[in-house]
Every structure is written in C-alpha cells, then in structure tokens.
Image: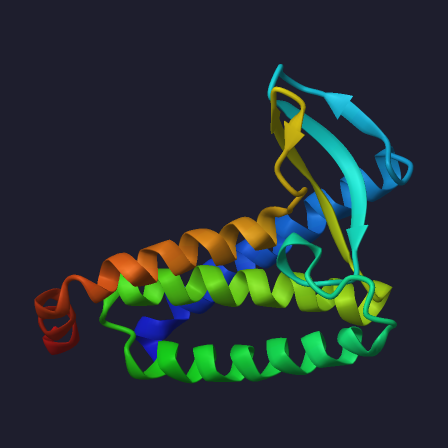
Length: 161
C-alpha cells in the first residue's frame, strides 16, 4: 500500500491543478470568450456535455449519467490496479495520470453537468477541439500505457523490487 501512495498523490495533484485551472477560467472568462496567447494557442471557455471531441454532446442528456458511471467504474478499476502493481513505475505513472484525469472530469460532470474545457490549439484556421488538464492527463497516461506494453521485461523487473 505504501508504494501506491505516491501514485495516488500524483493523481490528486493532477485533480487539484485541473480543478484550479477550470475554476480560474470559469471566473475569468464568459462562455465562448477566447483570448489569444500565441499565434497557435488560445485560452477559451467552453463546456462539453459529451466525451472526447464532443462525442455524444447533443445526445439529449442521458449521456451525463452514462459518463459518470463509466468514470466511476474506471476510477475503481484503476485504483485496484495501482494497488496491485505499485512497483511498476511506467504502468503506474500512466494509471495515475488517467486516474487524476478521470476524477477531474467526473467532478465537473457531477457538479456542473458538463466538463469545462479551455485549451485551444489552432493552425491555419483549423482548431483542435478545446480540452483541459484532465484530458491531457488521460491522453498522456494512455500514451505511456501503450509504451509500457512494449516493455514486458521492465514490468517483471519493477514488480520484483
């Protein structure tokens, strides 16, 4: 259990940073307002009732409960995996980032009914869908998990420590 505490602490740091930045943007911007930061990056306040890339955003409301349940199940599964594999550094780093992201976004869904997004990257008139720190944690965690799958020997070595 002691080894897994650092992974839960990392997830907690991500949740706190995610919620603080969402709060700051929510009180500093009006919905839809964008402020240019660079030639390719804006801060913008948007709300997403769907999942990634606004998937199911206009589904009529049922998706809120569905996404909350999916996130809560994922949080439980990830927490169990972190406790069981605490010595596997890359695997647990990926899980901690996904866990923090899942918690950050489920807090929004429960409290607001939607997720606050504010990071807007663009180029040549094309904008990547706005996202937040929780989404970033989930994405980086997923990439690290894929990388981890290429190093099965490292898993066994990490678990043996």
